[in-house]
Each structure stands twice: as C-alpha cells, then as structure tokens.
Length: 158
Image (cartoon, rainbow, N blue to C red; front, side, top):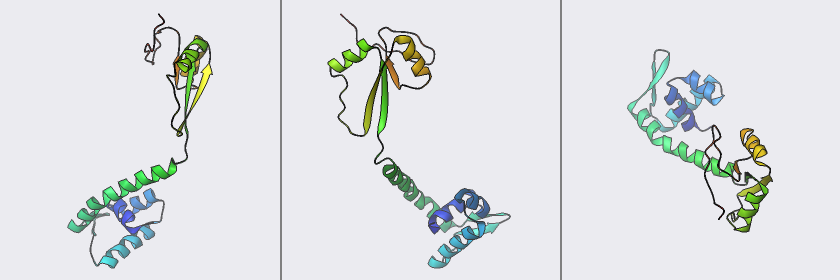
C-alpha cells in the first residue's frame, strides 16, 4: 500500500486505528508507513493530540494536494474494470410494438458496449416483468397509468 494513501486515511480520520480498520491493515503497519513517509522527506505531517492526531500545516497542504490524485486513480480503475463489460438493455413489448420499432429502424445497435434483447409479451405480462425488474422498459400499445412508472407516448397510429 502506498504510504501517501495511508497518510491520507490517517489525516481523514485523525486516527491511526480508524485508518487501519478502513484500510484493512494493522495499526502498527499504518504507523510505520506514515513514519517512513515523514522520514523519507524529513518532514512532520502529523502531531499527536489526545487519543488521535492532528495535521501540521504541511500535513494539511499534502492532504489537500493529494486528493485529486486519488480521485483520478478511481476514474482509471473504473475504466479498467468496465473495459470489457457489455451492458444489456432488455426491452419488452407487444409483438406489434417491437415489429414497428424494428421496421422503422428506430433502434440501431451501433456500439459494441451494449447489447439489446427483446422480450415479446402481452400488456399484462409486460407490466409484471417491469415490476419484477426483468425488463428495463416496456413498449405497450396504449397509454396506461401505472404506479411508480412514467408512461410516454412514443408513436401514434394514423
């Protein structure tokens, strides 16, 4: 674990023991990493106060300046985690509604990071599938009022 990251956890909670619990490492390991960081740069980042610690002026500056680094690290990790993930979108609809959408090319899958799946059901089955979270959204032939859902008219037959 990077000493700067450990220091930031101690600074955040102003406690070696709380930081250790949050990082899932021992309290002596936390103390050792922060001490090594201070010795490496011959600086004082923390001062003991009662049962905890407080930041020195330099410690406050280092803590503040390091936050964007860790935020960027989270962004990079999320890119890596979701690099090969395919998002599935399940669309439920009556046969007529699905056929109409596909025939008019309303839905064109051009990206490779999502997959469309169509479930053809009657109106009552679609409502039940939405309530059971088996489909992401449903296309039904008429506007209905369903508690907890918004209903929008997509097209009108002429």
